[in-house]
Each structure stands twice: as structure tokens, then as C-alpha cells.
Image (cartoon, rainbow, N blue to C red; front, side):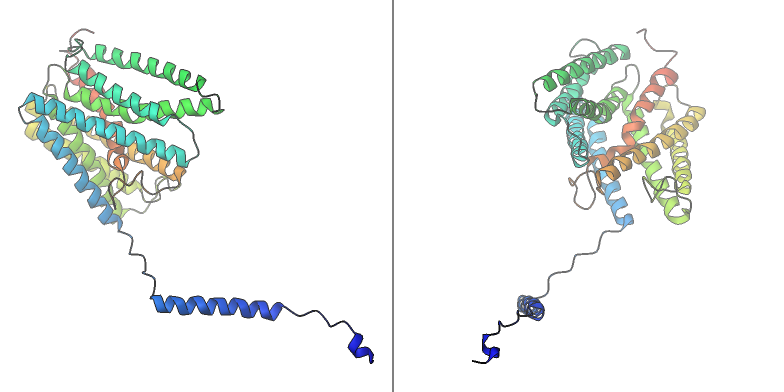
Length: 344
């Protein structure tokens, strides 16, 4: 027989068949998608202006409830509604912080930290209201907090000893402790302002809340209109030096207006203190906002949480308040009421 019949056939060229198969697959998918209908396009992302006003509205609603309770005249309502809201803010904010840490790959004892935050807030409240018999002296309340933090650290060490599988004990203890200090401990200064002995603490609380939000509003308004020079773009690309100046200016203006109309209800307050506090609280509000931006950027998220859809989380509403609360408390204790303070 001819050699042609005994020759092994050449291998098939599969390149074209593979391409044809892929083309057919794409064609089939295209046809199926046409039959089903076009996939819905994602909606437009909310603008910065809309997000800002949503957060401002949420902030106003939250603090309107707090302040209405405080000025209600009924101590049971004013004290315990205030406590419930403070504990809610502490737990929610702490859970968000530990969530950011987890996204960053940092281990922590989340349940232990949240439990510690609740106990710290309630314990401080009971001291401030005299239930534990230590009211009347700010130093005694501070001693309670110091003792609690020492026990909390010891508890974290014991928790680590009971978890031999966790080889990152240093990270877990440090992250858990920092979360407690960053959220509940700083929030506790709001309680200490409200229940400060010998003064009408509600007015100081209202004062520092108004100034804090004035800082945020001034920074956004001036930064949006005139912002050209970036502050720290690696942390927060949207913040400018012009916005920073707007924050300080708006805080000082709000401080002077507040003291002009309600300064007679605030012991030791005058125009000089109003200017000084306007600068201090405006600066601290910006730093607090930048600090939370740093945490979110390292965690790779836009918002600290999703408690408020389209707005963000609790930390997005509290970031500037957390740093302002201790400054307001320390100024109230060591400057405004220093001459009339009771002995420690």
C-alpha cells in the first residue's frame, strides 16, 4: 500500500478550536444576558456635601436627645438616659475600633475590651452620682479610673495566659488596651464635665459640643470654598490648611457668642477664656478627626462602620469629640474653677 496510508497523521492544531470555543462561550453569555436584561448600574456615590450634612444631622439628633434629657429637670431621666446613651456610644465605638484593628490584621480581645468599656462607664457614673460614695472630689473619681485601668491590664495578662494558642500577646494586649483608652476612657470625660461638682455642668457640656461641631462645619465650609494647600495628604487628602483656619475661626466665633449669651451660667468664664478655649478646642477637634482618618486609612476603609447607611459609623460622629472632652474637663477643673475647687 502506498506510504501515504501508513503515515501517522499530523497533530491537530487546537489553537483555532480553543479560540472558537471561547468565542462561542462569550457569545452564549452575551445572548443569555440580553435575554435576562442588562445588569443594574451602581448608583452614584453620595457627594461629600451630602455625607457631611447627613453626619451633621445625625450628630444633632443624637445630642439633641442627650441635652433634652439633661435639661429635663427630672434627675432620674437626665441621669439614666444620659448613662444609656454614653454606654451605647462606648460599646458601638469600641466595636468599630476593634473592627478597624481586625481589618489591619491586628489581634485583640474584643469581648474583654467591650466588657471593660461598659464597666468603666458605669463605674464612673456611679462614682460621679454618689452611689458609691466618692462624689464631691474629681480626684477620687480619677483614682477609681486609675485603679480600674490597672485591674484591666492585669486581666488582659491573665486572658493572654489562658490563651496559649495566641502567639501575639503583646499586640493583643496593646490593641485591646488602646481601644479602651481611645473610646470609653475619653468618652468618660463627657460624664465628668456633666457631673462636675459645684457648677452647672450641663452648660459646659453644651458649650463644648457646640464648639466641636462648629469646628467641623467651619473646616468643611472654608476648605470646600478656598482650600488649596493640603495638610497631610497621606492621611486625609481632603483636608487643607485653609479648612484648618476655618475650623479655628468658626470655633472662636461660636465660643464668643455662646459665652456672650450663656456665660453667666458658666462659673469662671469670660471673654479671654472663650478665646483660649476656642483655639484649643478647634485645634483638638481637627487632630481628633485626623487621628480617626489615620486609623481608617490603615484599615483600608472609607468609614469606621455601617451603623448609619450613607453616613458611616459612631466613630465618624465622635472623632473630634473624643479629643475635645478631656481638654474641656481639664480646663474646667484647673483653670475655670481652680480658685474654688475643693481639696483633693
